[in-house]
Amino acid sequence: MTITIAWERKLPGGSELVFCSDSRLSGGGNIDVCQKVFPLPREDAAVGFCGSTLLAYPVIHQFISYVRQYKKNMDRAIDGSELPRRFAALINRFLQAYINPVDLKSELMETSFIVGAHSWILKRPVISRIRYENSTKRFVAASTRFPRKQSATLYKAGDFAVIGDLRPQFYQRLAKLIDYENASKFDMQPFSALTSMLGDIAFTDRHGEFKGPIGGAPQLMKIYPFFRTLEFGVYWPNRATGVLHLNGRTLFDYEKLTLPQIDGTTLETFYPMAELNNADTWPPVAVLKP
Image (cartoon, rainbow, N blue to C red):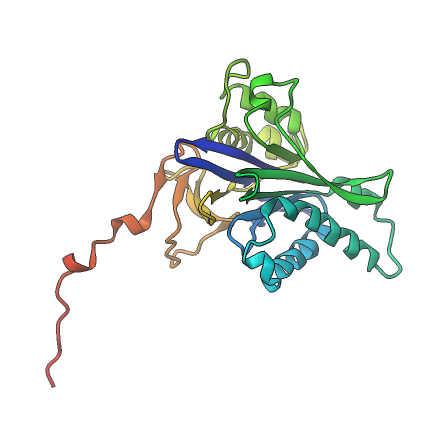
């Protein structure tokens, strides 16, 4: 049970790749503190998932290891546009390794992934959805855009993907934040649409209208065109009344997060390192004499 989203955010200086998701896993109850978006160690790409953790977690960790240990990946000699296809190849090999497997059909059909990366060959971000194709019995990767039937102009805005539960409801919420008729690019509206859903018990309450498929604090990650990935701390539900989360997890009081932090409601962003003085303005350090 999940909703995970990725999109290209076009800015004057270049395009960011943005990922966000909820933090709920289901199975024997709800666990609302679980990471669903993972940066890849080459710093220009990430992967998110929805569905069964029986498949998703081991596959994602194997892919992270593959990226880290294969030098052409870390050097980015392999372009980011190649990563979705290689991810699909890895999960298909993973499935072949099962010994005496149980019937995994429901897990396979409900599990899908988003792989997004900056492509130095195409000179733009690329986003692909990886899902199980029942006709071929394999996971396949395909690029994806905003649905043309929702907005012909946003269809042209670059790659866009949403996977998981409540997709129709997500598009309805998003329509309240962006003009489907005229908008030609995305800012942070998809994140705001997600946070509005996470603040609505109709979507998060297991006894509510939609049986609570999503929940927890929102997760946010940005991948910049200069090949730098930043995970964001999120004050949820807001900075005034909430607490700071990172990848769905509530931080301990003693943790000092140096990453950027965003108010989940207002989108006001805070940069803790900006509060530090330059070294030449620090007060003198007392020297103890022997």
